[in-house]
Image 1 (tube, rainbow, N blue to C red):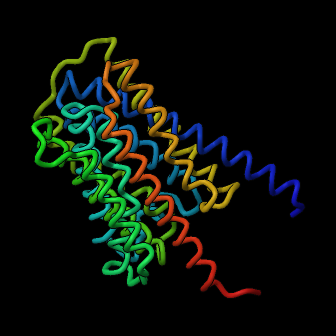
Image 2 (image 1 turned 60 degrees about the vertical axis):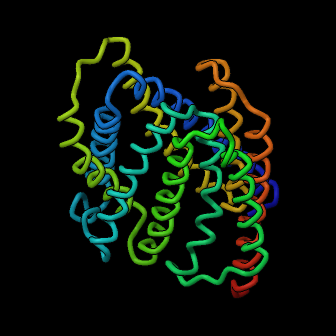
Length: 299
């Protein structure tokens, strides 16, 4: 591959990643709007119904069909991934409603730090002192955002931390099952298991939805599919080490959305804490990239 072509692919990957960040930010804004007016269970259920239908359609059109998509070396872990993800999504929507988009995402930005901290006990990966130092610094940023002991502290601020922990656990389990299962298998299982798990709760809390909000619901379902599609295409044309830091562009879109759509404010402690968390997370991602390159055999 020529250098020019590699640069062109990287540039395309960057634009695709930026597009996915914008789409996911829109998805979260729509989730907050719907979650403020309807049961979170119902909103997440409809979203996962469409997602499950989408992954089943993809599986049916792929070589081997549904039988190949269902076949996994880790059925219990795949089922656990689906359950963890559906709980994480529901908790995140609750946080959007109770805490707001900006502060929820500011706290959720610590996810890479949790991944680094948990990668040792779950995946057996070595975490050196530099990454442990970055993790400690990053969580000091979370404390700046939370302001524990201050009169303005909200107990709801703990919810994004729970969501970040679950998403980190989901990501690590995804990496674990990826050692033997294809990505299409993992994609199929989270869609189907998530839809099955949330359906009883969503139906129990079903309420009529206005025609205007059905349009928002359709937007939510479409953004979930389009966002993941752009993300997959981005990683197909550019290196993950280049694209991973760009995921934090979503914080920019979220801030604009929170201020201009929902009338949220960007408090100084949140801005400073987010900067600390993101900086520590980017350092952790960089150290992970350096470590992976140092142990990769040359050919």
